[in-house]
Length: 336
Ligand code: FE
Image 1 (cartoon, protein in one colour):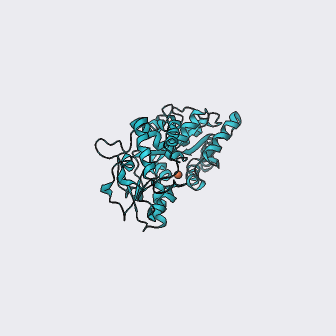
Image 2: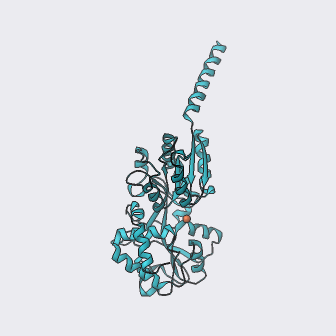
Image 3: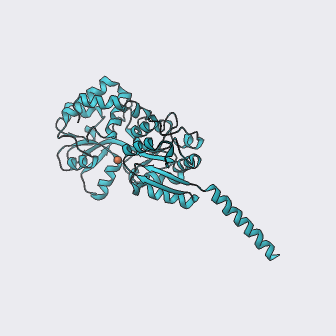
C-alpha cells in the first residue's frame, strides 16, 4: 500500500516535471534598457515560470540595425526599448510582428500601445516642467507653450533636440496643435534659452539648480534620481496643461514587441502579458521610478508624492508618425 502510494506520488511528480519542462522555454531579449533596469524582472519571471531569459543590451539604433541584418537568423524573441518614437520605428522597419492578446488590450490603455499591436507600452514617464524653487513660484507656470512667452526670456534650459524624447514631445505637440502653432511655440522656446541645449536631462536640471536658468523640461525619473542623490536640490516638478482646455502632461513609454522572426512567439507574448500584469507592473515601473501603464496598479510612494496629473490622451503612435516633421521643425527654428 505504502509502495503503491509512493509510486503514484512519484508518477505525479514526474508528470509535473515533464509538463513543466515542455512548457518552459527560453527567451532571448534585445534590450535598449540598461541591464540593471531589466535584470530584476527577468530573474523574477524565471523564478516564477522556469523560463530562462537571455539578453543583450545596446542602444536602440544599433539593436534595430542588428535585428534587420540578422533577419530570419535572429535569436531575438523580443525587443525592449524606450520611447514610442523608437518603438514605432521598429514596427515601421518590419522587425516586429502584430500580437493578438486580450490580456494586453485589457491591461494597457489604447493610447499607450501600437494601433497595429506591434508594440506595447509597459512603463510610463512624464516629460514635464521642472523649476528652481528659489526663483519660480508654481503659480507663474501654466503650459509648455507659455515657456515660449517673453516672461521666460533668458530663463529656459532645454536638452538637445537630437534626443528622441524631445522629438516625441514636439511630434505630440504637432498632433495636438498643428504644425504652424507648434513652430511658434518652439521658436519661442529657442528665443528664451539661457544657454545652449544640454546633452541630457540631468545636466539640464543641474544647471537649473545652479541658477544658470530657472525652468526646463525633463523626464520624471531623472528628477527622481537627482533628488535621491541630493534631497536638498532646489528643484520641483510642475504639471502643465492641466486647466479645463489644457490637453494634459506629455507622457511617453518604455515598451516591448515580439520580433518578426521570434523562435518562441507564444512564450514571448506570455512574457509581455506578465510584464503588464499587477504582479510585474510595480517591479517594472519602480526600478526606474516610473509610472505603471496598467491603470489598476498604483505608482511607488515616491512617484505618488509628486501629485497626480491629467496626462495627454493623444495616441503615442503619433510620436513616430510625426517624428520626421518634428525634427525638421526644430531644425527650422534653430533648436539644436
Ligand atoms: Fe531616459
